[in-house]
Amino acid sequence: VPVLAASPEELILEVLHAQEAGWNTGDLEAYMAGYRRSDDLRFAGGGTVTRGWETTLARYRNRYPDRTAMGRLVFSDLEVTVLADDAAIVFGAWALERADDRPHGLFTLVFRRFDEGWRIVHDHTSAAD
Image (cartoon, rainbow, N blue to C red; front, side, top):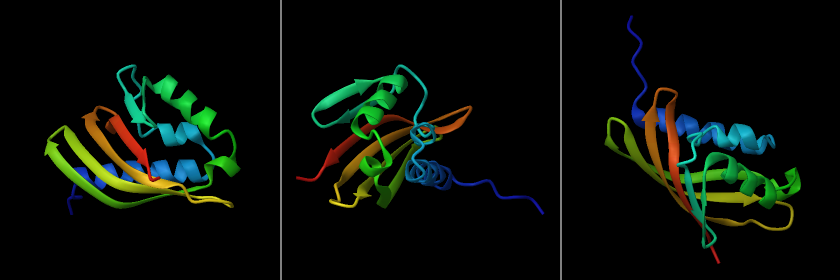
């Protein structure tokens, strides 16, 4: 019996679920595996633009230095729109469940398909006021 190939939507959701799992075990490198490891990666948030995989990882490490700061990440309301065989946009909501607060917001991700699979090449994340 032939195995049905996973759809682009399913493969992209797998990347996002793996990011949640990495974050929730305190493994920022596992979380960052969802991003294209490239100097061309662009992360926009908090009124700033960060370029490059290593720089983005450093930004996360600075903002979330320990498990308490990281909390538990939950993605919700995920909408995957496939634009082409190798391109998609994902819109969704994020929330951190922490002891003293629950920061949350929205994001738009641009995914591209590479030999290693679907990866985020642009992330625009906002936090709710």
